[in-house]
Length: 289
Ligand SMILES: [Fe+2]
Image (cartoon, rainbow, N blue to C red):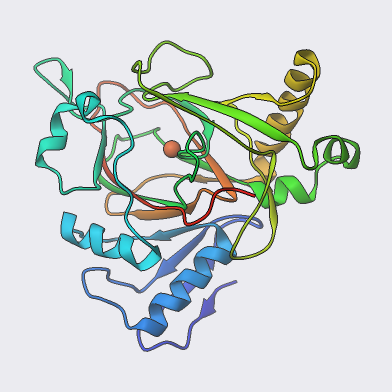
């Protein structure tokens, strides 16, 4: 099923799974779309949580401008002394995700392999609303991104589990650069924050599961063993394939995802091959409630 839109820049919305992901075809983001088209893109994003703009040829300036269609561009969160080497060649707000090394030193952040499901910046008081990721160089296989719908997970959650966790809060902790729960791969810089276990999306009014395997430490005011058991139930449920879209990257893909109602993970890829992506974020406007 695809839906043709009635805006001046006609584009096609092609849903990719039942719950999450749609490809928007026929938009060249080097030119600025009219306001009506920007609104239609924004609505498609709210409807599908993750949208893909294929076959783009974007400069850093283009990426910064496109980010602005969805809100205010976010600053980099990790302290400057932990910036990888390649960051000196980037416009403010652009982060380099790469495994490429120069003289043995990684040029970008999050260089290696598999990464557990997470919501970007859930460890901040006002987490990023959205993340944009643009592929410049991709390996021949692997390095896919999996996106899970937090709405679908919430809507289908066991009623007993939901009742036990409704109105509870969870603690999140993240060491920048770590890729699995509690590993020692990250820097010593970290963020920590408490948010509701189920988050209400301020634009759609829908509720989503808002904990993740990488960053959530515990549910507050529950015995440790019960907290751990319920977190495992939530993670296993949220990551079910039926709620997930797996994106196989092509060079020139620009993806935009909603951190308020979806989480994402990365599959492993050959460390011998180059992977280079540019990332920006859109600032959140409210703390999770
Ligand atoms: Fe992420």
